[in-house]
Image (cartoon, rainbow, N blue to C red; front, side):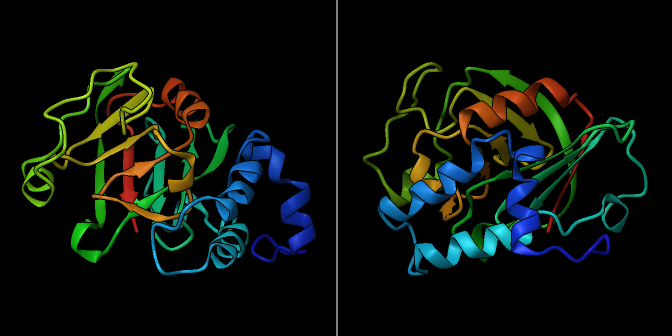
Length: 199
């Protein structure tokens, strides 16, 4: 098997390497939860399984100083490489609902927030005036979950999630949402200045 050729069996057998045993159940569970898009849940699962391990950091970054995060809108996954290349992690994620909400390119982590407060953006409030003005950190209904990493682009984040059904779906207004145990693990590895590329 070459570096870029993976069989379904190889992917499933090495899933625990980066997914910490939590990603597979959350992907499977998505089949039983409400749809956030027209695409069939089974297709989402297959697409994610096949897309997880197909990236090399060199294809997207010039270096790994302070580590690197790749947010892949196609495979609906967030990849992380540590500066010393000793750690490579892949997490299933929610992705932006449409191209209208998707910003692609290179950015970086500018702020890390533990138990973040969620404040809907002005555009979100305009589209849905029933949204609360804010949801405090620690509230189980907080769409940002337990951790958030702000990017240099205003209103864009990699953060936790309030509803596991969103993982693996087009369900956000531009952010990448991870299961809370995953974002908590990533949060400990990321530093302010970690480079982030959205593709």
